[in-house]
Image 1 (tube, rainbow, N blue to C red):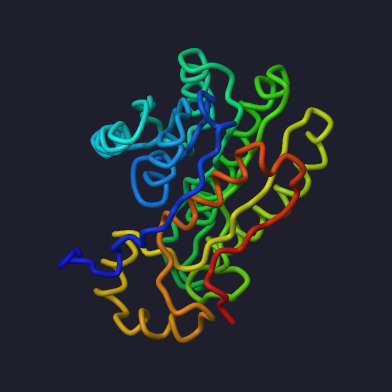
Image 2: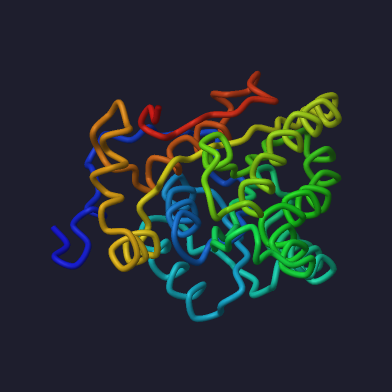
Length: 267
């Protein structure tokens, strides 16, 4: 048990194995920390050939080293995803090394808060770039390779915050609500190429960043959130990773254009 963050202690379960993911090239954005690092480790454990993008070299290297304890060591590129040309070039380099990507998990995002009356046009544009725009352009970069390889799976990360109408998050909730439209339209557009597009909609997932911020700013949130959930357990990054594995694997071969909410049954 972690004395510093006991809420983050993993729940031991018998996780599924997906043979169709073994050796499959997989791309994950924001893979250096938080949910992204758990996604990287989970796909490596399945034997996938993982590449990921992150803006911090030290964080990315730590995540790659941790993931290599469970499977093939992932490759990564250090890039700012708001620079679309640089991001697409980094994806091309990873594809040259790992093969045409058959799975993309658009995970990267940031839920910084700012009251609506303080939002400026520049801040708005920057938040859309951080939380939405790269999801489309990273997808655009992998679609030709997926189609040539016979198909694939794209998983977009949403958030239930827009469903809750969370205050102080107007830019984030706007971007994350748009992920649903992006997902459904893309699913229709690329379906004939045997590419599936779905979204995962997490609730409050307890990463180290989320726990540290909650303890500092609103410590009552832990009890309040559990009160709102049907299932009285904290949500952890592996809960998201397990859904991403299923959506990436052949087991979900006829599932597309859907959203999968992981929030413990929040009211």
